[in-house]
Image (cartoon, rainbow, N blue to C red; front, side, top):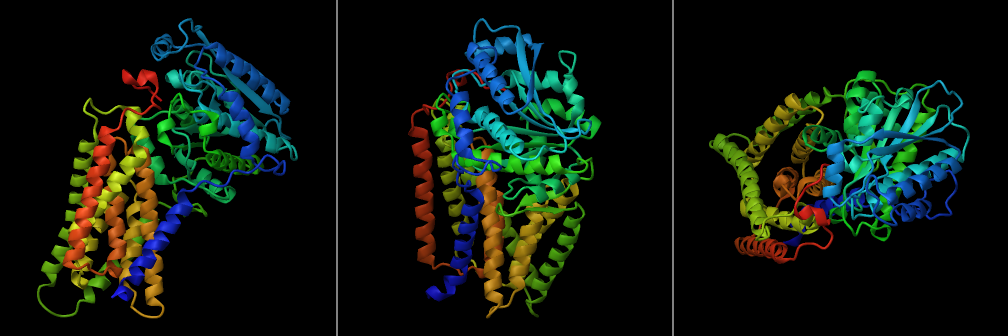
Length: 579
């Protein structure tokens, strides 16, 4: 009895293993690592200075930090210049409302530093982070980790041969109150724009929304093909995807790169924006101290930064705009890239595979109805999952309504709630189903059509549907036997593993507002496991559904009954910040 479930269980274990590999941060390197390597142990010494106290824009604490950063940059061999500009008066008022200094000055200050390269006329590589925090938060992650990662990267670069081109550092002011420093530097508001702007040939920005998790490339400039190809060659343990880039373009979120985008597009300068978003309860939190920062995340963002910086510094010419690429990391092992048109080729192959599954049903009546039944079952799974997760989410709301930061703090529990609720829907719809070949072919059709629609409308994001549909269809064509079953386990495990990673990342990103995003990864994982699926007995299905449903309800009620998280910033009880 158990033997028939072994392929399915092996695929599930492989998927879980790949998910853990992809979502686990690297071990932080100690401070005694060779000088040319990135060390979170060394960078943490800077984080502890940066995050010793809250330092909102215009505060004495931020001025003290700025002076320390000047000394630190100068000690690394950089020439440093302070660029003072008039702050937006509405943003000053907002900063005071959020707990910033009541006597905040009208001026803010960016820091611009340069490590000279061998060819001073060559376009420079610029690294950017912001030196202000929100009021009440020490900002160990946002943006202390970014500042420290840049300082450690400059130290590592300076420890070796003089780079081919200049390495520039931009530490902006006023990001938290409205991106003021970046607006002045890149857009010239208030005028003039910083003269160093036009020396930049590539820009890397570092951010954080939380206190841990893998660092991900989530935003690029337009025409990113050559820039992404260089990153794929340079970074040893990458994380990022064109899906994240697409979603960030349509979501109403901002970082300092937002203010740089018009200039970047006009000049063709490539940009990379990195952030980690795990431990989301620490976002803008009074508890975002150096001791609570995940040092693995610091190692991750710094290691990717150093690899990419070295790749750009050594490039004979910096990337120029070329057509966007589809890209995603393969569980952190490599950055996979494809041209946009590759999606149509893969969809064609997937259609042929689905047709081959259909032809395997042989002769007989009722196959059209079976195919429709298979399609309907997958649509029903999607609909039921979304409905049940929405219902569980409503149950989880506090009586007084949701608080943005409190929901962020609850993200791990919301992720558990959404996952168990999705499993409830899965066992209701699929638990006792053993599809024939016609029904299996039909199950692929709605997802293939959705993939084709996404390929037409957003080809940079379509891979997230195209590749799972293709691999799942190929899995269904593999024969049982000595080599067919292991290959089926491998394909199914890879597809499910990527869906687990995708579900985790999407729930981290938007799960506090929209946990039903778990629907798509569940349906795609189901498609992958169907060729190996062995139906449960009636009793086993009933027990599993009831157990998952009760667990989801208990988690939702626990979130509802829990007190407001002690990590939320005081101003969040009445306002919501811009960035």
